[in-house]
Image (cartoon, rainbow, N blue to C red; front, side):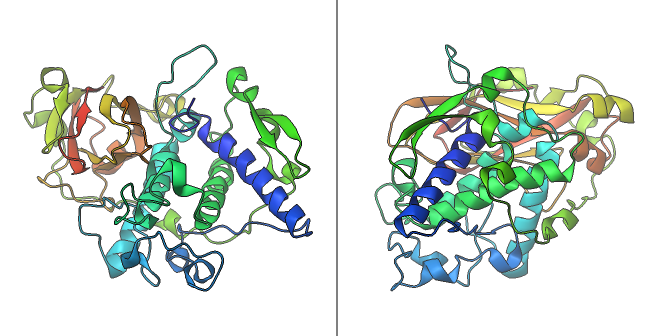
Length: 383
């Protein structure tokens, strides 16, 4: 069983952090102890916090990327093999990633939480928006590339050995609260009873094994904690519009996705994907979000792979998160298993098509741009 790549990701880690915090508080005899969050979603908080960067601190981990020491900001679109941006360009990219993942790609609970994983069913392997990015990128960016497997943060089995893991996941947990507050009418917890009644077993601070359900962790105030209310600068980083001629998505000739996939992603691939309906009204868009689904993504579970997804892009390399044609990425934190993984990833298109002025197009052109693991990942279909 894997709590990643599904709707279990957020609630499992919330309970994990809850009991870890309680255990630490008991060990130091301080019931008010709270794990700080690493607010990599704000420019001032993007570098590794000083308390974790001091070599003489017990919070320091030598198995980190030496090239990513403070004051260098974390790269929330980190590709490992491609040079990172620097300075203001990196900040703008990070802010754009946050907007895309928290707004455009989180317009429905299903997009935000990830695919279902119920008892008796095979796992779909479909990440929610934040698990996919920037959760994964912070893991890979922090881990030591000189270690065989990118330890500590760069692998599931070793990530928890680095104290910063807990500050990282505190901020991931914070994103859940922020997401619900951004649009209370539409951003709601899932109401599926398979999700609500899913249970985990943890040891509490008294060394007692307890069973807890997802439905009991939806309100952090009831768990005894809230997050500091600080500004969200990324809300102002609406993607920039590029000078793409109206109708390009429908007029540009590329092969249909069904004619190309499945295909190994060793170079950029562009395909035409028909839309279910063009020129939708505001009411129609509110009633049902338009979603792009990349299915049949296959790779070895011990490999870090990442590819970007663009819609109606006009260049051959991909322009990055700051522009409206950037739909998002697919990425993963590797495990130690070489088992072949078959995953699905979804991307919200409603806001993106508005920004591109492509709502009247019958088709869109979808580009998959391999960034890490070229030739080691296969795309199955795009619908």
